[in-house]
Image 1 (cartoon, one colour):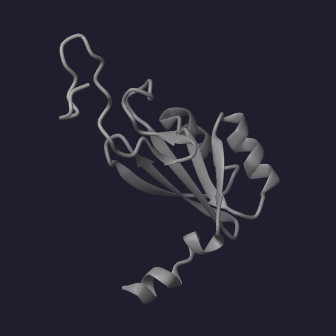
Image 2 (cartoon, one colour; image 1 turned 30 degrees about the vertical axis):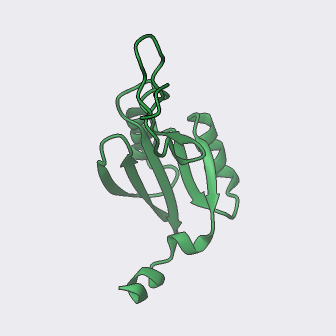
Length: 125
């Protein structure tokens, strides 16, 4: 490797520096991912309903969906269609949700409930 950091003839180039993971279950480095889209899914139950936020970290595509709960057939359809690699949920375990997400092959990442708080961002703005 040259002092400039560039590979010389016959040398193997190092990948550029930068982030290769967004969260523990979601890789974004093109040498790691094996498909075009790389969705990250967030699940936020509110009473009987729930909000789902979808982010394709490979393209920046982002959208939200309101679901009627874990039994909403659209949720299973969306999980099958988008095939997220990871779901971000509140820290408190939910056995029914955990079972659904694990059966879909998702890595479950638990975060503090404040990540789902509506009042904090409103106050900050």
